[in-house]
Image 1 (cartoon, helix red, strand yellow):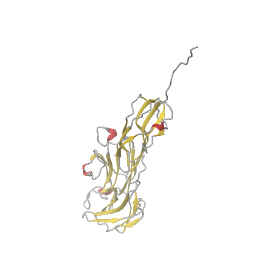
Image 2 (image 1 turned 45 degrees about the vertical axis):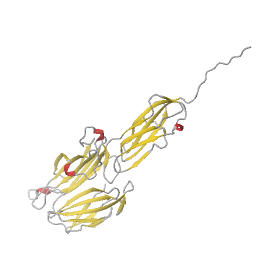
Image 3 (image 1 turned 120 degrees about the vertical axis):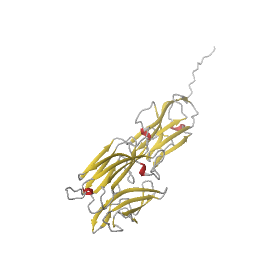
Image 4 (image 1 turned 135 degrees about the vertical axis):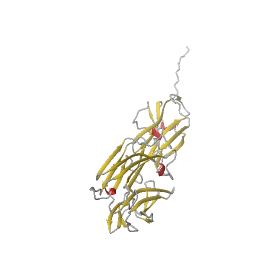
Length: 346
C-alpha cells in the first residue's frame, strides 16, 4: 500500500515512503503512472503541487502555517487518463497522526480492490492523542467515518465523492491500532453479487479556532461485481455425430485480474476437474476495471478424443479461486456400427 509518512522539523515536513517503484512507475497492467503531492495550507487554502519519486524523501514546498496543512498523494495513469487519490494527511502543531490500511485477498497495490462477495479488513492506527483539561479538544480525539458509494453501471471515472452515503461514524480517543473486519460490502444494490463501487474510510481531526475539521488519513477499496457467463450453441444431452455447432461464449463483469477459459472432459460435470482447454477460448486480463467479452468457438472437434458423454465448462480463475460460470453435458457418437448377417446358399 502506498503511504505518506511525516516528520515535523522546524515547521517543515519530510515526506517518505511513496512506494510505487520509481519516479515514473509502470502499473501492473503495463500502464505508465506519474506521482505528485499536493500541499494545501490552512485556513488560507494556498495550494502547491510537487512531482515526487515513488520512493524516497523530500521536504515540503511551503512552511506549515499555524492552521496546519493538508497533503494529498496522487498518482495519474497515462492511458486512459485517470487520477487516483492514494493518501491524505493533515499536519499541525498538536493534531494527532493517523493511518488507514485496507487489506483484501487481491495483491494489487495501486488501489485496494476486491469482489462483491469477498471479505476485507481495515486497520486504523492513531498516535499523538493527548489527555488533560489544559490541552485543546482536537488533540484528544479523532472522528472515524465510513462511506459507501455505488458506481452504478460504470467504473467510477469522475465520481463525485461528496455524494457518498455515510454508513457509520465513531469517535476514537485512544492511541494504538484498531482492526475492523467486514464479511462483504455494504454498497447499495438490489443484486448483491453485482454491486460495484467503493468503500471509503476516513479519519478527521476536530475543528478549533485555528483550523477547520481536517482529514488526517483516508483509504478506499474498490468493489467489483461477481462475473457471470453463458455457453450457447451446444444443446444439453444432445447427440453429436460429425458436425459440431459454433459455440458462443458470453462473459460479463470478468474480474480485472482473471484468467477465463472453456474446457472439456469426458463424463458428467465434476467440480475441480482439469480438462482440455478449447483453443481460442482463453481470456487473460490484467486490467484496472472489470471486462465483458463475447467469443465464438469453431472447428474444435479435435479436443474430443473418444465418443461418449462429455462436459463443456466455462471457468474463471481470480485471486479468490476458481468459479464455474456455465456448463453443458452432451454426447458424441462419431463411429458407425453395422449389424449384418452373412449366409450362403448351397
